[in-house]
Image (cartoon, rainbow, N blue to C red; front, side, top):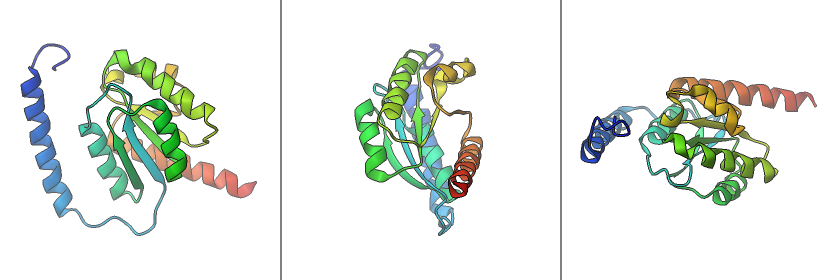
Length: 169
């Protein structure tokens, strides 16, 4: 709504604060995550994007489904994302893109990850793709995250299929 001029920055920040407060209440009452780790996911956003609420919520759902999360969150330069995937040995990078003008930064981040030799999965998501979901195809990512549950389910399926393929070879 802020992007469309239907709310002020202060109103957006208040809505985010209220949502974070509610999220913390839910997280404090949620049981611990399963002991078996499904995979490792790095959560971050493109350079210039400091919106973290979506990544926080996504991280919660990944954790609930047995994933180990590495929350780098906002404004990560492409080269630091590429270094982090090796340092933390992650299976998946979830890249948040808030504004359509940041899609070019997602393209650069995906390109940097691919050129680094890292062979993991890449998901892009965020408000930049809400009105134009097919724009994710220009990024070179493996899939588009449309909501947290679908993203985690899809990532788990892809990682399981990939692990099965590796075990056969």
